Length: 330
Ligand code: XMP
Picture: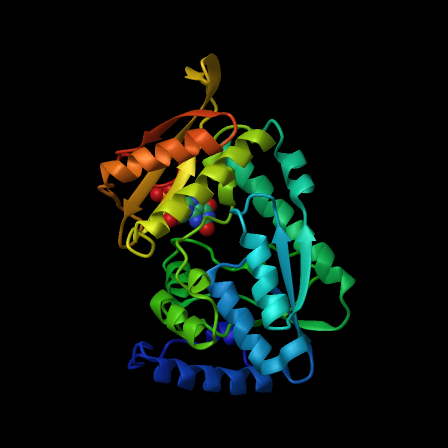
């Protein structure tokens, strides 16, 4: 069996930019996947992000129920995300989908942990453990599918980042890799995703870190503050969509820092958290500039967030470009 990790993007390969090019790529990949996988089972960690969603959709077309998708909800996803994964993949595409709500496991392990790197380690380690437990429950899985894309390969080779998720799995779980979007750039993955019929909200979604809302709830995560992050993020996304900013601003989200300040609500003193709004533009996330948001939108966001999100009495806008700030807070 050929090692897929040796597959390289051909030097002269044309950029996949049109539906027809995407269709040709899809047909080629389906044939290659059927040939590689035969009648065996394939496992995929389906986060709902662009890359894993496109890989899932391709594999469903190629091998149908031989694919087992595992969606781990670590409790740090955005509002509506697990529901969307279930709706699109189980209900609409009839995929074999294992949904694991591991919220309590993750949040219990994270309780009281303030160090950002420690938080990341716990989230990453627990994710692999939950995924491995699910994998062990299944019989006859020979392959592990991954949403590796071409920039991941290049960055791994340049020593910038290690991207091999499979590298983290315990020794008793040895799989052959399947990487059907390995030779594509991100914009090409999106074109292929659209051609596969995935919803635009999934294909064009903004980048979202693996540790999820955990890095937007700085310091020790508590359920109530995490809920304030999730609810304010949902309001921000809704208002950006109404204002026509969806797809125009590169990344936008809210952060709820771990301090409270005095305010007044319903004629009474309040002592609650602020919500910080971040909205940035960038090409490669190495540097970033701040979006010039209309004042009316800021006012609307402030009114909705302070009115609808429990435990919040202020809204702030972060004007800091990268550098000196990073995009995320942890
Ligand atoms: P920073 O905060 O370093 O973020 O300016 C740059 C981009 O990377 C994303 N990011 C992450 N993505 N795991 C991820 O998958 C992470 O731990 C992580 N940290 C930051 C961030 O959202 C931004 O787009």
